[in-house]
Length: 520
Image (cartoon, rainbow, N blue to C red):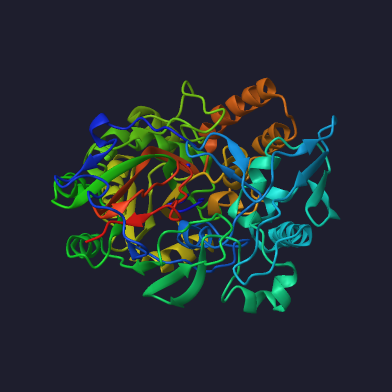
C-alpha cells in the first residue's frame, strides 16, 4: 500500500514454521459460524483521509476504504493475476493496444440503492486522474486520453499510447467506482461519509480512537458480508494491542512487534499466521537535506547495514534480505540482482569520497511505540558509528511521524512499501520518479536515466522487453538510490480462534467480506 505498512503479489520466502501457526484450540474457530457479529481490529495508527484518490503513502486509510469502494477489476488471492469485479468480463482491446472496451455488471448498486452505471465509471476514473496534480494517485492514469460512456453498461478507454499496466491500474483502490458527481454532494462532503458498492458502509470515524463500518444490506454479492460491522481501533503500543487481544477487547491484531510472535503462536485461543507479502522495508534518505544529496553518503549507508543481523534481532528470523527495489513475488523481480550487502570497506571508501569524509550528525524519525522501528534505529546507530555518522533518534506518534515524512520534513526515516497491483510499475514510479505522485517515496530522489527507463517499461506490452528494462532498473537503482533497502517480510497477523476465514492477500488487502465469527 501501498503503502507505509503499506502496502503485496505472492510469495516471500518465509520460515516454514511460520506459514501458519495456531494456538492449541485450533486455527480458524472450532464452532459453527454465528450470524453477524462485530469484528474489532487493533492497529498502531490511523488514516489521514477516506479520499481514495489521495490517501498519500499509507495503508491505514486504504484498508478501510477497500471495504467501501470496489474497482472494475481485482487481483486473485495469490496476488498474481487480475479478474473482473465490477466489470462483467475482461475488456476488448484494439490491435494497436490503444482502445479498451469494458462491459459492466448490470446487478450492482451503491449502498444507497442507486444503480451503478457507465456514467459513474467515467466520473470516478476522471476524478482520480485529475488528482494527480494534487499529489494523489492519479499518476497511475497518466496514459488515459479519454473515457467515454458508450451506453449504461459499456465504457471505452482511449489511451495516449500503449500502457502495459493499464488493467492492473484499473484494479487500484484509487480507481474505485463512486457515484457520479459524488451523488450531488461536494467532494469534501462526500468523503466525510463515502458511498461505494463494497460490502461495508461508513458509520463513524472518531479521530484518534476508532473507525467503524457496518454491513451493506444492498451488497451485490448475495449472502455477503457475514459480519454486521468492522471497527479499527487506534492502539499505538504493541503490548497494549497484545493484551487487548488476549483479553478479548479486540479479535485481530496486525503484528508490528515480532518479539511476541512465538509467544502469541503458543497462546491458547489465538492464531498466529504469516501471510505471503510484497512488503519491502527500507531506510529512506531525504536528498533535499545535506549530506543526503551526496550519492556517496547514501551508498555508504546502504553498505553499512547488516541485514542478516537486523532480521535476526528485530524480525526474529521472519524475513529475507532485500536485493532489489522490486519486491519478491512481483512480476519481473530479479532474484539475481546484486543489491547492497554489508561491506564496511566499501562503505568507508564511499564516505572518504563524499562531501563529509569525517562523518556528520543526523536524526532518524521513527514511530513511537513501534518496537521494530525502535530496534532497527538503535542497530543503525551502532552500525553507522564506524563511518563517523552520529545518528540521533526522534520518536513521534505514528500518524504524526507519517505526516512529517510525507511532507519530507526529516533527514532519514524508516519506510515500507506494499504493492497494490500485480505489476512493478506502481512502485518503480512511486519510488524513482519525483513527478510520479509520491516524490520518489517522499525522498525527492531524481535520476533522469531511471525515469526514462521506467517510462519505456510502461509503454511496451512485450514481456521480454519489459523484463530487460526492469532488470536494468533494479541494477541501476542500487547505485545511488535514496532508499537503503533492508528486508522483505511477511504480513504477521494474530487473531482469536473464533475468527474464521480471515485472509490477507499478498497485496495487503484484508478480505473481510468473507470473515465469520464462530458462535460462542
